[in-house]
Image 1 (cartoon, one colour):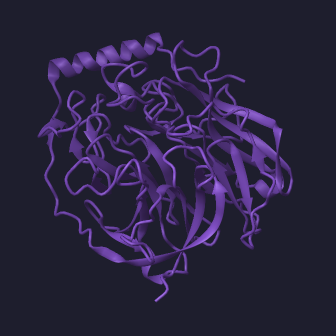
Image 2 (image 1 turned 120 degrees about the vertical axis):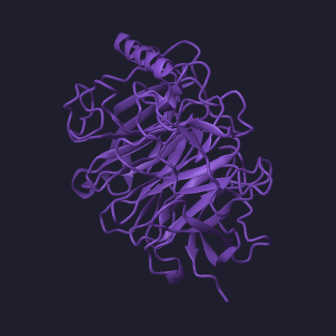
Length: 454
């Protein structure tokens, strides 16, 4: 198996040096100044109910289902367990998959690593193949002193309710310097390719060890960190354990790595596709702004030149500069988010970390149809206080959104840390949450969104 290394290459260094020289001589073609749009309303959108589906988990990070008409759900719990929820709501006692011995050692009080993503092959019924994204201990060939190695691996389920741990085929490995900013979502697109989200490598401001100064990993098209990747798990035309779609933006490898689909991300924790085939990514902000992006192939989403739709200063993350570059280092435009809201570090901030969401097309809650339902992890760090929101898509500019209160809760918020949202085969939505900020304990739960009871 050929893993991927983040070590600098000579051609990469030459290209970056040339680009920076051009920028220094000519300057940017234009400068960007943020113009504040009308403030989105944060009045309540209404209420939604929740139904407890599963508990006793540690830190449920992702939920997925195979297209096999069984109605089953599979929950990735960060310590390394995949739990199976049957169509009748019962939870199988025995794990569907247990890779706890392969996941990096986690701090129970706070950690951003672990088993973070799960996806089923679109022909799972025939081939039994599924994929996971997890942090392993740092591999031997990684740079000394770095934190961990991200793995995207394939497993096979030869039995209906159990995957074979011995069937692991490591498809991709990425070394990262810090514990935080892993990304972690893997999802099959309508094109049949696997999309993988990666964070910028951690620390803060996209600077520090392993951050490819002076531009950072998010803007560096020769780094796989701070990206959304797209690979073909059904071929190996790249000389690696996967293939490269021919229409990937840098498929020829001349101006960037061939796996890259979009770039300029800080920590795109969760992604989702809607019924129109549009890709959404929730990118966690630094200190001031949280964002959700509608992702275009080849798009540059601005980090660390911008945070959300605002300019960003790597030397002062607590204040947005009035102006900044309007293009990336290759001269390409920087794309703005469709949803942006203030981080809790600001006055009247709405939360600490957005965890992405889904376009709701289910039938259980008609008033939410065709609204983008998303969530924030928590307003505070000590006691979980995650918030739900509903956004109204707009033809242009930022989408308008409102808080979606949870019926029966004192302040309309969950009262737990919301880690992620999920979706089932009927397009109904789920909340993955826990009472703990870290991946320890057994206070993790899965809730299903339901109509509020009058």
